[in-house]
Image (tube, protein in one colour):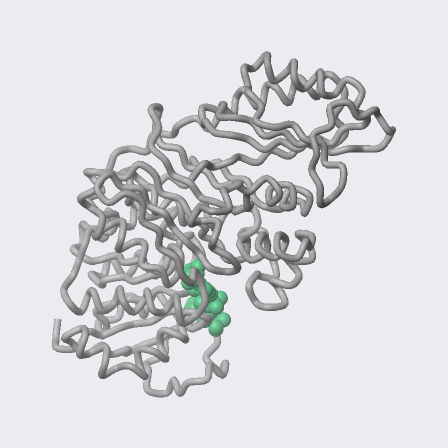
Length: 441
Ligand SMILES: NC(=O)c1ccc[n+]([C@@H]2O[C@H](COP(=O)([O-])OP(=O)(O)OC[C@H]3O[C@@H](n4cnc5c(N)ncnc54)[C@H](OP(=O)(O)O)[C@@H]3O)[C@@H](O)[C@H]2O)c1
């Protein structure tokens, strides 16, 4: 390597163009920190003519990112195209095989192909850095992979999707519906035109699988995540949670259990006074529980051009400084195979909302079915009005639908499932029951 670290940058969208502008505008400052000049030599995107607010004439243009990845004129290939296949995958593989270091923000690619890519990177003696792939600008990869290596990590969890957190925050603060908040998120550029990937929890799942591997020294396993999104959360749930002292957050949680590792993404009720409950709007946060350090919370911007570019450039500077760490924190050969723990073994408290026809016999049925499953109830409340929860076991049936809300003490998913099935068989429930796990964190 010469006295200049030569960069090839593929993808000039939200993140790519921010990274490019920053690498150019802060060139001197970055060189001082890196101890080496960092020079973007070549770029690639789909449209050569699009106005990107920066003069691109000084950079060698490639229509094909794979050709750029193999170019003799670069040391580092920066992939900011996105997607778990196609040009992103092909160019990253080509760069690694050509002996180039790779920096990427692509969580989908790392979640799906991370084990194989890390193996090839090790074989070719190159780095594969992906700080920006999880929680955007928050330096969580470095924290888990490098700064917390003296810890045995028991759990890692967080809010890793700004779109979902924005929607849930607005629903709570303004009593709006999911659809209203989603529309606003799209108008403000916080949500994609097709928000499915975000609101159904898949984006969080990708990030979680990467953190799981780094935290527990296992292979990345993106097939073993239990995923539930936020589309079924109603303002009634949010308001009931609030009145009971909780907030609803879409959490990604990875935890060591006696039977294996639990990876789950789902709406979770967290106590209002917990650190994770304070994370509002598009902000992300990751909490890492280590045996030496205790609980560490990292919070900040999980997306956005500049914030994400900050992590991308830090990865590049690490390479200029000669800091190279195994992509998954240890040799791929030393990673344990992922052993999935059954979600049905998951233990915790539960919020259950049952919409019932008539209150006659409902409370007796609930009490019996819960007792059969040895589930203890912390509270059973009838949602009489939107703003007022009141226990009222003696209320006579009115012929209208009513919401009954149950809060359980710690039990297992399996028992909850069995109890609800039995209550359904008793014929009282008129709608799909809502079940939200409660995290005592
Ligand atoms: N946006 C964020 O806040 C954020 C945060 C964290 C991580 N990330 C990750 O960062 C990556 C980039 O995201 P982004 O939001 O910047 O995406 P984006 O705005 O959609 O930009 C994608 C870029 O890739 C280029 N591209 C697409 N197909 C290509 C191909 N076949 N050959 C060459 N260039 C191609 C596009 O070219 P044209 O411009 O010509 O269409 C565009 O410049 C993704 O992996 C994403 O998950 C993004």
